[in-house]
Amino acid sequence: MRLLVTGGAGFIGSHLCESLVQGQHRTVCLDDFNDYYHPLIKRNNIRGLLQNPRFRLIEADILDEVKLDALFSEESFDTVVHLAARAGVRPSIQDPKLYQRVNIEGSLKILEACVRHRVRKIVLASSSSVYGSNAKVPFSEEDPVDHPVSPYAATKKACELIAYTYHHLHGIAATCLRFFTVYGPRQRPDMAIHRFTRNILEGRPISVFGDGSSRRDYTYIMDIIQGLLKSIEFCRDYHIYNLGESNTVTLADLIRMIEQAAGKKAVIERMADQPGDVPITYADISRARKELGYAPSVSIDKGIVEFVRWFKENRGTGS
Image (cartoon, rainbow, N blue to C red; front, side):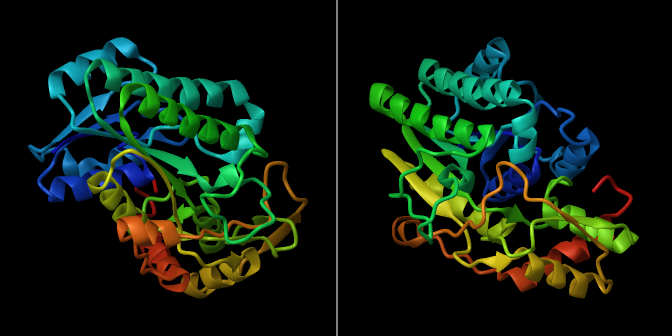
């Protein structure tokens, strides 16, 4: 199989590229190495792939139609895995136009390239943020998602709708995956588990928004990769799936787990709740279990130990 992975040098993308190459697939990584966080981190993520003959790196922006057309013409992709996006709820509130341009226009350009070059399958990264402040838990793919509480969430919902339109008009098989708070080795440095671990180990305060009672469904990276690989294999028609652990952990308990794994106590600075934050995320994964065979296996306590171990081993390398 010949696959394009957009955002392939990022946290999730680099793990996926490794798994695809190990599975003997021709894998092209498209990434623009923007400065949302230090580009060296992404370059370190894919360093071990650069000499592999089944791997190709293309440094380009998904908004560049000329480069997209050239790439799609050269490679004749079977499937696109579209992970590239501007991430983060709070930054999207500060710069909504950037999120609209990259996430919505960028996805549209990828879908247009698929139409022009007859790529029949696309797997797109969506987000649990589309559920907003959903009062019903766990969150099901059948729940209404018409009330996003951040520009980031709105862009992800828009991408799901655009993917459906292209499925309807052009017959492209499209699978949209709603990721629930992914963590693990190579996690982005702006995300809570990474920031908390770094600050605790360095003896610096951590900012805790709210009273610590908010709950998240944290999903270990290799469980997400399992779901992605199964979604690529079974991509047909149009589907939306939750990919989570289907288990929630309070923010206070998460901090205690990191403290235990790090062997140090946190210095906590209490902050007010932030716009765009939601009180809980909780995935109903029964559809993904039944239709994809998705079976997450890494509990949060084990996953945190693995992340802290990775962080300690990689300090000083741009992690």
